[in-house]
Image (tube, rainbow, N blue to C red; front, side, top):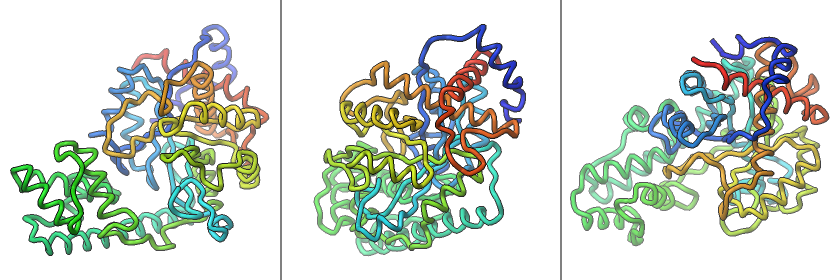
Amino acid sequence: MYFLSKFPDKDELLKWWKINQKDQARKVNCHIHTPYSFSAFADIRQPFEMAVSEDIKVLGINDFFVADGYKAFHENAVKHRIFPEFNIEFIGLLAEEQKKGMKVNDPNNPGRTYFSGKGLNYPFGVSLQNIQKLEQIKTESQKQVQMMLLKTNELLKNINAPFSLDFEEIKKEFAKELVRERHIAKAIRVRLHEHLSSDSEKRSFLKNLYAGKEQKADINDNTRLEEEIRGNLLKAGGLAYIPEDENAFLSVPEIINIVIDAGGIPCYPVLLDHKNGNYTGFEEDHQRLADRLTVLGVGCVELIPGRNRFENLERFVRFMEDRGFVIVFGTEHNTPQLIPLTVRASDKQLDPWLEKIAWEGACIVAAHQYLKSRGKEGFIDEKGLARTDKKQEFILLGKAVIERYLSETN
């Protein structure tokens, strides 16, 4: 049973908060991937154990395409007394930007758009039409992965590799339901160590697999080695890469419709200054970005500060905060590298003001989940628009919801 279903009504909750209120910004992380898509975590229990050790009080699951991990996420949240936020992520297309050749928040593909939903209903549920769309996305994504796996096995056969890869085995051993190209890279790394003994054999094998390109990653650095395998074989331009079919992508308006149907808050993930320090055409003009999101009916943005310089992060957050946007932070954990859950910028820790913004964003999502669990209107109104004029009310209610939850014992 969803723990929020047992909470007191709003008036009683706010009365309790008035007596027990605390003036503190809790540490939060509203965007982590789990093994139900791909993540650095060995299992879904691990991020909660890390959250306890790092004093993080709110965690948000944010897997690609699926809500398969929600039940286990809820169970572990209750067990560890961490407030859970139920999110989801998609990869879609903005047709107007694609026609212009403009890059959105994917720095490599014009029009390609990562897009999230925050605070979805638990248990997850959408209309039959949207279930069919979600199934289509998963089917097309798995079809692409299977085609890349076939091509990878051809490469392995051509170099007389002592192993081949099987989709069902990868799914059983390394994934849950959804197999991604990162799982293929992990499988190659694991099988490499299983079948070859010396480092020189492994380096020679990888050089052959890379069609003569020198292997550079440390053989014993699992994270870098998997990233190198993925880059040489499975990313765009790689030897086993297969482009996604257009059927694998919904339009952003379709994604927004699914998010709202699932009870969530549409949320745009901001790339900001990425690896080379540049901004995409969609994001470089912050005012134009804010205007475009407003036209789309999006009043929430999220950032992964670990990829941004502090000064750029702070400047952008102040800009969007002044314009009434809800802002949430996370770490993703969508690579093999197991970094801390504590959110920080690429070059320094967050300051108290940014921590306060992150806390308030998490509180708005928590208040939304609470209201939706009681059959009430949440942060999204009946027209599908964010109730940004009610931000302070939602922050207050969210603080009451989270702190009441944290005050209880299992």
